[in-house]
Length: 239
Image (cartoon, rainbow, N blue to C red; front, side, top):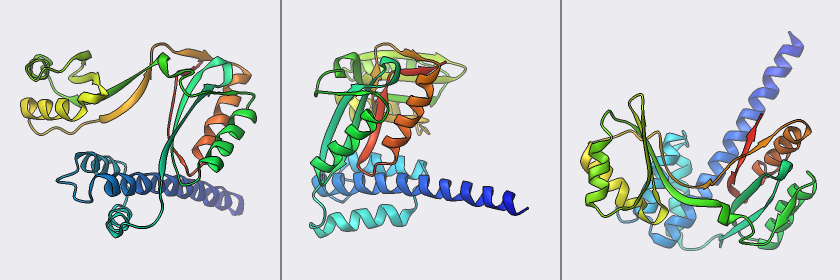
């Protein structure tokens, strides 16, 4: 029983650490968006969307409220966005988005994740042209023509739309995010989006196998443990 209890305690600690990192990342991003665009979600669409995503990911209200209150104060950390690109295990490509108050520290931490896994960090722009920056909406609805017609009527360029088993996936340019979301809601009513975010999607995927899988997992673990890392996009598929 002692060992079983220890295993359970370690598992709970890992879960707690993961949750803490998720909360920290949302808190930092909410703070930055609220500070730059205003702390009122009704007048800051980016903030409103981010809060909705945070709630969907079960971020506690006090984490959200504390970040907004910090932004209202007008002082505190001065975070800036940083993006790093490079080649990971098996030749996979990755884009790493960060929010940092110390770019030198963040670059060193990210570079260490590359070097410790025999990967190569690149210059800005080295791999991003292999990805599309898209707004993605996935929701349950049984008639794809209704949102399709609404998007066309709103002069939105649809990159792709898929419908399968009552679930619709819509891909549009990241710059059309708010316009597209409003068109979808206006035409389909109140929806519960399964996915409602902007991502970098690769043009093609690279299959990772053998020892590269372990390196990939180590690489991702190292990045996910960095407080400054907000999002990691890649084109790896594990075999």
